[in-house]
Image 1 (cartoon, rainbow, N blue to C red):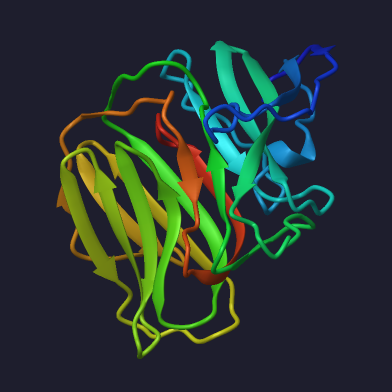
Image 2: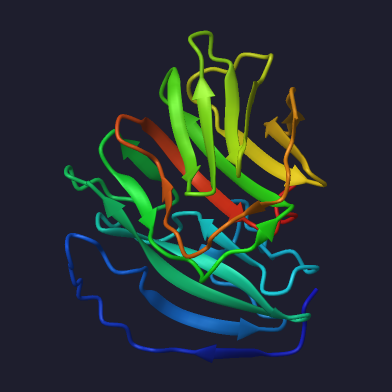
Length: 256
């Protein structure tokens, strides 16, 4: 456990939106805290209440947490970037990710993002620059409304979607760099239960898990570039489902 002290730096943030050529500004930082032994903000915890930490073996590693544990809002959802700035120091930065095309003004918050087939979540820029990744984790918890494809994460360099077939088998399809692969659970699910999804790369092998069960096939994944300055989106037009949590960890190891 990290121990000792906590330092909070609070800054006021103007929430006025500036539109330039219909492109929104990057997420607003709400506040940042450097912590040793501090309790993270609720938005920085997993949906089960556990602290989320980046890979300690990777300098400048970060994790994006979207758990929707905030007051409902129709313009944005408050996410958390947990970044490692030293061996014993984590920074927690709350950010606003926009709800694009939310024409019905669906409220996101209270622990859930109820996608209605119109809006999606857009985090325009998390970091700066890119780097080769040999590990990667994306995990989520969701309810599905029926057969279809559901976007857990979309990015220029990586993407993960869940899919449900007509017999209610749940699967995952992942793209890491130039490698794409898909696998599904052999046991059918049903409408209603929370489904725990995990796609990860470890030691150049891509693996999917549904509710803790490894799926086949796996895939060989070469190290690939991931540009953290590019947008990350969740959800897509036409998708009706409820997301309870998604955690994106480009350095891997947070959520297995």
